[in-house]
Length: 120
Ligand SMILES: [Zn+2]
Image (cartoon, rainbow, N blue to C red; front, side, top):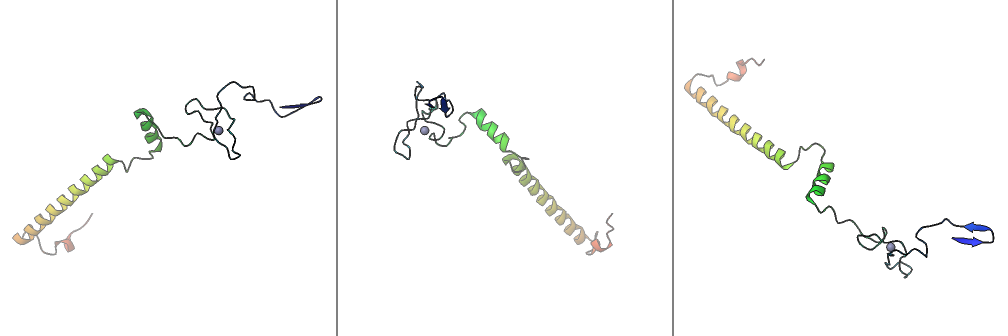
């Protein structure tokens, strides 16, 4: 804040030159130490602190996972269930095919029985 005669230039800032707290101190592009107030966690300001390293606790990780989940159609358990259902379907269709073949062989079903079949 600059005071000239009866005019005050600039806005008052609580982290001015007399502020007693910890400064960031990172090397700026000008070569001087950064004067911004430091964060308590890492001792650097918000411009020099670096990227977040992510959630640490199980609770935090679960919260992020829940926030990014849209419908859950591709979660591990759902995919496993779909694979299991597909395998069951394949098994059932193979059994039906075997039964059909055996019925045709025994003469119960005509070879072209599908032609006469009336689908509802
Ligand atoms: Zn800084």
